Length: 124
Image 1: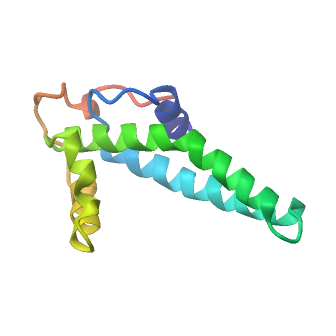
Image 2: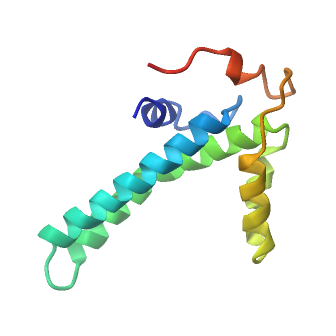
């Protein structure tokens, strides 16, 4: 949960680097929270699912900027421009390419986006 909160705290920080663990832990917790919100919305929702849609929509609005920021920082960690976040606009192959970029290991040295985040202490 610390990784999730660390990303939320840096929700508009598009500079710097995010290591793989930060990115994937945020994504995992984000999926779990979305699942729980969907279940809660289904339980308390009405027959048309308006509350469920509202809860999911509010969460999506809340998490949109932090998700973009951590993805851009993850691309920076692999020494790529944040503009690569637009590659999924290329049908089919774009999403695969972005996935591969997020799975790749960090640039071990200081790059144009900052020092290696693996050398920094983990969030508590």
